[in-house]
Length: 383
Image 1 (cartoon, rainbow, N blue to C red):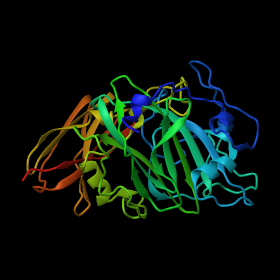
Image 2 (image 1 turned 180 degrees about the horizontal axis):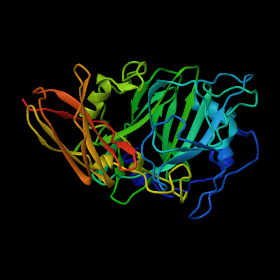
Image 3 (image 1 turned 45 degrees about the horizontal axis):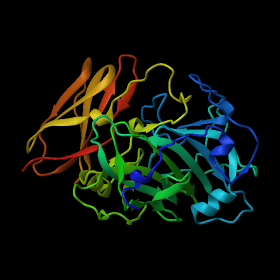
């Protein structure tokens, strides 16, 4: 499969009919959820918003939509996605995700509808194991990402398949991370070409086997210039529930292996990288603009052996703060809050250790108390 996107016919039709997103599965009921132009049909008894509490800023036209499915007590415990998705029961609910970033964590809370009700199986069980998701959306470049070829990767516990159109009306698997296993990184062996205006339809199929850990993270990085054969990463194929994230911490903390991925150019796709092909509005996003930090716009503007300066923007005036983490000893330090409400932010952090890899993120708070933070990025100080 050479230069996968070159073979694509980007049709990107997102089916917002709940029962139609997942073909070939049984359905608990015949109910559907249909979005009308400009205003989504919003039934709190059929809508699951951000089930894993990823807590990134959501926009009304960005994200992924899909099905929640599960196995009943009398069904086999399938160990691959094809069998799982073919035989699973489709729950009577539509799931909205802002992005695919669920670091390794325990999961026993189940899925809550916006009405506050807990989704139960037809056996009356809470769904925190032997469930699956089939999410659809489109991937696009963020404002600071350069058009060109990209390599995708998926961290998952348990199985996950990332699919794109094959140009013939079907789909082809781009990243295969199938099977029951701890958190595992698998990487695409073929590049995908992204242009400034292109939107790549994707399907992410995921299943969770036995309790209790879950993980689901989609990443990409620019394909190395001049390389025509497959490229890899030292961590591709490596697995372990404590390798990439420390799930014993609340909130979950990244570990050195994750920061090494960031240092090698990998990036977690954020809300700005996803869009709904046909869904006009995301009913889970606030009707009024929320405080937003454009993670793609967070940039290091100066770095020495002991100093780093970071700039970013927010969509409305807000305060400024910088969090720095030494990835060698995981010591976290916060800068003092600059209380000035601005949209263009700049902070300088001093007293750093030379030749050290740091992870950083920025934080802002609006006048009304809304808070937002960027995803973590890495920067090595000079010698």
